Amino acid sequence: MDVKIQNVSDDLFLITLNPPINGFTSFISAWLYQNDVTCLVDVGPSSTAQGLLQALAELNVHRLDFILLTHIHLDHAGAIGDIAHAFLQTPIVCHPAGIPHLVDPSRLWEGTKKVLGATAEGYGPIQAVSQNRLVDAQQFTSEAIVPIITPGHALHHVSYWTDNYLFAGEAAGVYYPISRGRFYMRPATPPRFFFDIALESVDKLIASKPKKLCYGHYGMADDAAKMLENHRRQLFKWKTIIEDEIKRSHTGDLIGACVKRLFKEDSLLENFHNLSEDFKERETYFLRNSIKGFAGYLQSE
Image 1 (cartoon, one colour):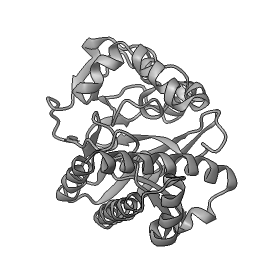
Image 2 (cartoon, rainbow, N blue to C red):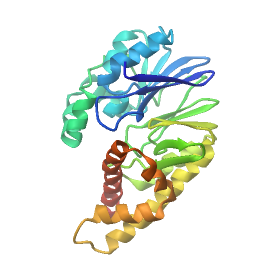
Image 3 (cartoon, helix red, strand yellow):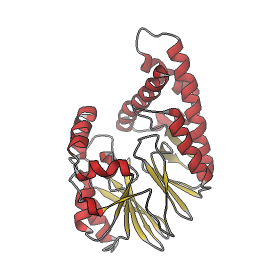
């Protein structure tokens, strides 16, 4: 199976899911939390569903208290039909706006194919889930897990807080560790993006005073407060730079001009050049898409 299991703490496993897409190795993950409750946070795309199930079997996980979805994009929730079938008694918690798309995922699938093309095909189609399995995150209560509604990356985004961990999905951006103390980090701000909503979500996460930050993409950072502040400052830096480039009234490639400025002025992007070539190709696409989100927001103000 093209899945990697990493025991990052006594009660936490990082399960890396590698879909059949060039450059997507060590990019998509699910988190298995085993403490007062046993939870799976995100399930990855449907193309890696069997690998995830094998990983859970290898970890002797035959029962889950909850499946927690941060949002319903296919790289986070695409395997939910397969995983729900394997764990028939487990409630699935998600944002209420995501529930109709999980019950009938046809629009979600067609829309994703239109936007992502071959990448969507690599993720694979999502299978429907019965509505009686789905729990509105706004109504969900647990002594061990606290949902935090965090629209920004997506309007249907939820983060989940425990005593030791904050599962932030993409509300805290995309992170990739290079070596000890060195990392690459960018906003995850695809169209349609709303800066004020994203900022409010980040501030909610900071106010939760998390200890360790668990990213959907990719891995865990020990100093959660510092990383969230880094992300907050990065959002403002991107806003300033992209706004300035828009004012220059480009007749050519606005996105390309923003890329050049950001690589020059955003220190959190400097380790881009230490990524492998296939990672760079993937990140160039998502970097440009995140700039498009900012530009669309700023040009509509």
